[in-house]
Amino acid sequence: MTTPPPLRLLVLCASTRTGSLNRRLAQATADRLAAAGAEAHLADLDDYPVPLYRGDLEATEGVPDGARRLAADLARHDGVVIVSPEYNYSMPGALKNLLDWVSRIKPWPTKGVDGLLMSASTGAVGGHRGLIALRVPLEGNGMRLHPTMFTLAEAGDAFDADGRLADPAQRDRLGLLLKDFLTTVEAAVHYRERFGSP
Ligand SMILES: Cc1cc2nc3c(=O)[nH]c(=O)nc-3n(C[C@H](O)[C@H](O)[C@H](O)COP(=O)(O)O)c2cc1C
Image (cartoon, rainbow, N blue to C red; front, side):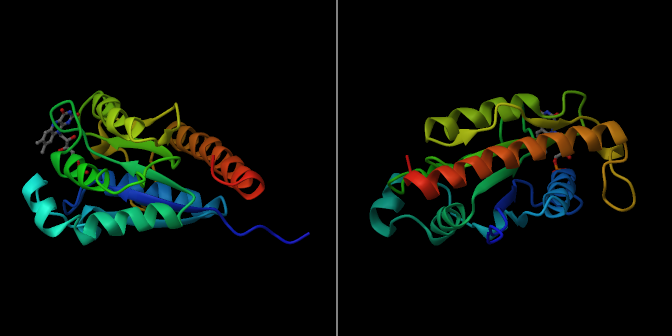
């Protein structure tokens, strides 16, 4: 029997800030995915530059390359992990703007994509409310979101010098969730191989 190719995961960080805590969480996630035998590709919003959505701009110039690039990256991966800060109890406007552009491509590039949501925050709630808000457009546009999410509260103190989660309990929580998510993604890949896209 031939060894199946590794699962390919896009890890998209929705903060571009120097020293971003969400980027650290995204990196720790990519490292754990690689350790589990998957291929993880880290990206952030700068990889998908788009102007502010305006209907008139779409009518004259079409969907910008940045949105088409994200659509292509979703298509060439088996699943996506979105690691996003919470801004004012919701998702960052830049992420919503990118998703709005992507939703103008048909069929929706998010449709049928397996996704996992994560957030790191300096606050005590860990960005959970932002992820709840993020679920709405993603599920509305057909993404199959993992039911459990990963939120990291007080994230400024959460990482050790090697970029790993300092607390072993948090490391276990992340590891178990990623294992669970990879199982779901692998099942979907096998389903598509046998029966095609649903
Ligand atoms: C505009 C803005 C709004 C914010 N709103 C929230 C919030 O609602 N909840 C929260 O936990 N943190 C909030 N924060 C704090 C972020 O959790 C913190 O800045 C975090 O470090 C941002 O993620 P990053 O480090 O990946 O850039 C907000 C930060 C900004 C800049």
